[in-house]
Length: 491
Image (cartoon, rainbow, N blue to C red; front, top):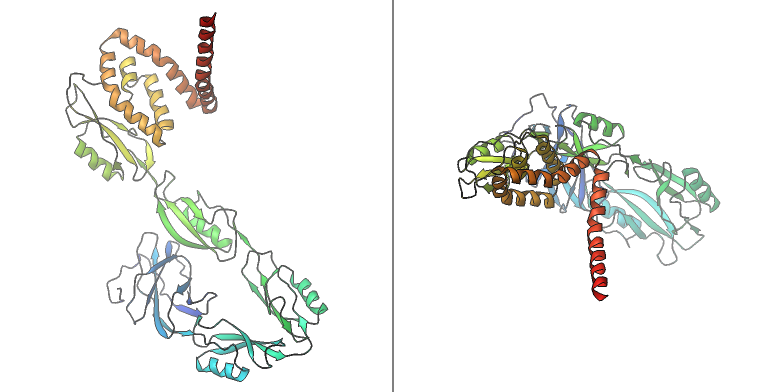
């Protein structure tokens, strides 16, 4: 439970005191709409709305981003609710509470079936007002009796809210209300005139329908009304196309969305390789057609992290270095080494100096000490290649490292392959580096691998196309050779 008397953190710059301006009737049941004046700070992160059923005693706040309108759902009738709002900036600093606003939630009474005077009296007694009254022709409902009410019974409203009534005029001359939805205002007026009706109040509302199209009418299509009755129209303001703000900075993205008539909602921090503060994702997506005032959520990049060099460190010190850099310890791979003490990092993946997303895992290769097989490798992690070419600085080793980092580490199967290689290659590398003959054989074996990896780095489409053709050719060639042997054997 939160109270305004608890200590609060204030923004570094002056954050204007929030004023709750309007408390209005919502479109959906059991909800009230709260609105307030926006703050002007450029680093405004958003607002948090507090609600409680007792003054100055609030529950867990709702973070609504930069929106200045909030619908409080699930309210109970005949209960007084208390609201207050705080603002916070992009650093997470929060303002003090705004002034508190209270409102009594009322349940709309059921007046369908009552006479007009009785219905109006019931609404007045409940603290509500009588709204528009429409007379409908009915052969089944007596004249003067309420046929329908808007909003319906039991919906939550605030004191003074208007309830529209549709009242029977009894049997008599009838005009059938035509369907006007989708037509322009001029066309709708012509259709109404043709059936002896007129245009009533016209209201522009936010809608994705084409600008000027009728999106709602009262009474609805098919209603039987007295000739000459007015039909109220709601006209679409037209859709808004959500602009693409990904890759933009937070301030530029906010300006672009607000210029399009949209509102920035909740902003979350996302681990990403993109520059810090840049938009990584947005919802709704760019190009979507939405109503003006739609809330757009943003994911902002926390910025990349440079992988520190942990080779040569004790494992505990390596963990500390990774944590300090904003990274986490991944799979620890143990490898025998005749030259590096047990517990010291022999290698790491990804390599030092690479840019990765915050909270990425770094897999260290840790020495398990001397064994009968010894060990080999170096800072690059290509143990066999390093043994074959004599140095982890050799061009072939560096090329294989780049291939590993670009194509293998980015997905689980590739990472699994690398981990298995790290487990089985040190003994092989130790045997290779101790024999010039084995080094020559290894270099010859690695030559096509190095050539293909180099091609993949320059022209991946060609390289992987060749690899696919080769992969498919193996069973085909095997089948041909098998058939050839069977043919010879049958002769």
